[in-house]
Image 1 (cartoon, rainbow, N blue to C red):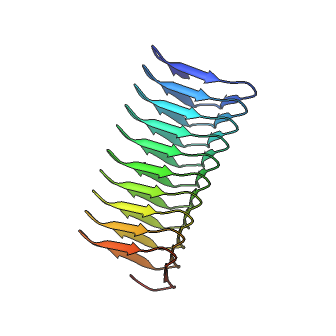
Image 2: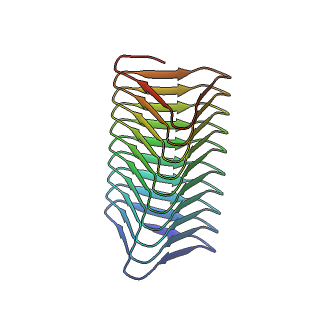
Length: 242
């Protein structure tokens, strides 16, 4: 089913494809827009749903792809925007969910990729933002979760990477900020956790690295801050804890 309610637009420009396989749904409610520009693809495989509620916009610019594989859901609630600029890809593999609730934004700038592998979830709660600037990557491997609760921000500036390997979690509770500036990397290897509780901040400035190796944990409690200045590195080796 494609259901495109009043005052909406689905615009799929030249050399583009919308492919909605068996048992899938695109539901685009009133005053919403799906705009998929030239040489772009929305491919929504079997048993999937893209539900984009009232006053929302999904804008996927030239040479970009939204590929939402089997048994996955992209749910973008009221007054939200997913804007995925030129040469970008959002690939959400089997049994995965991107849920972006009311008054939120996912903005993925040029030459970026959000790749959310099998059985993973990106859940961005109320009044939160994930902003991934140009030439940056969020790669969330199998069985991993980014859960960013109310009034939080994850800002990953240009040429930066957040790579969270299998069975890892970033849980960033209310009123927190993770800010990873230009040319920086947060790499959290298998079975690792960053848990950053209420009113806390992790700020990792330019050309810095937080590398948290396998079976390690960074746990930052309420009203705390980890600030890692330019050209610095926090490296937490296997079986270690910060």
